[in-house]
Image (cartoon, rainbow over all chains, first blue to last red; front, side, top):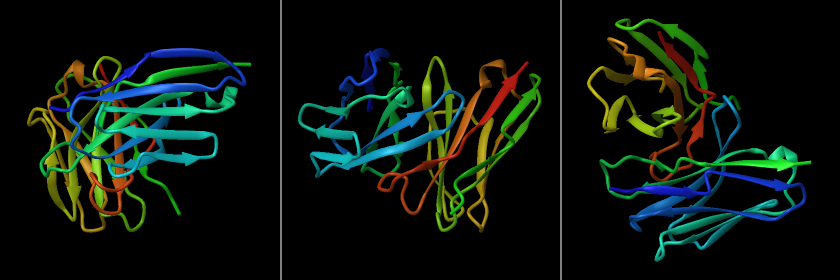
Length: 114
Length: 114
């Protein structure tokens, strides 16, 4: 059974700092890995999707990497801003039919202080 | 293009009652997945529908059921509500498989069971 872990559970950084959020998964037989952002009381916004054959994806100040062999993904945020404050979740999908489409970590709550 | 729409946004029910939640996917999307989010358990997969057929089901009791209509709109029903059913219920749509394709989430329905 796939388990996805995100450490730390919460992180506070000053504005302008570069930061890395970590995601680990126990089963490397994933189809892809997605990073989401969730603002308080809101739904999830997809940030980046990395296919299992890819090593990284970039969107603006965000860069996500994937290392299937070690069961790890990281989300790098450059030059953080107060508007980046939110909970960031990673989710792994499985190729095998009948499995849960997405298994989520519990998220990292990020606070960027102005 | 309109996003995923969930109604209602908030619900208050009492134990023993039943509730129906609705999800309208992005136009053209055929897959709808449902998730339950609680502070303790995080995001947990309920079920996925594709072209009116349930394709995957999570580990929830039979009190939780769903269906999908020919226009891809989906409903989720919870019967005999328990206090532990209080949660944010999120719906996500994707063009094809919930495993392969990016999932787009709605804002959720917050259910409170008293």
